Image (cartoon, rainbow, N blue to C red; front, side, top):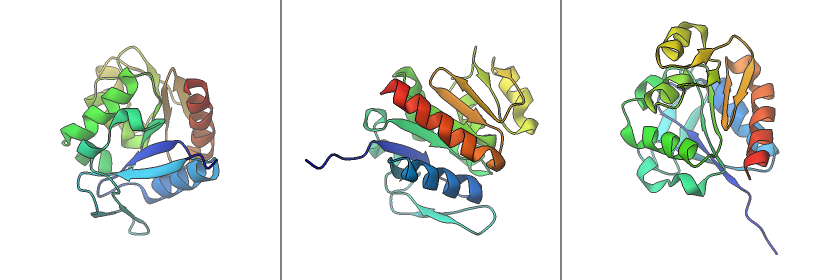
Length: 176
């Protein structure tokens, strides 16, 4: 019997951090997950901020139901600031958390968590320049490579991706 790999939604928008997106995608694929890129417009290509990576949105957020994914992941870079303006992306993140399924964010990806109003009362890490935003949203910021708080897994930067992917895989396994 051929069983389909669990799917993880990887959110994309122009300006994503190239390393974060590619290393997260590669790590999750190597762990046996199907990585599905979800961006504002299905079929559109999105460019990384360093120009070394592009990603094509396989699904638009309105066609992506949280229940279809084992987890949702938000890479950092400049993309999260753009994602915050996309209500359907924010709703996808919020629905995933409400259902108790894992959500991961790296660096500035925490901006999307803030907009989804899911950091209140949680311990998270992020890029240091937005630590005050996490605090203002009711979260507890800590400067650690990776933080797990229930279904929420956060990391500071691209250098933390190996630890982030390992933690995310563990949390997905616990949730599944």
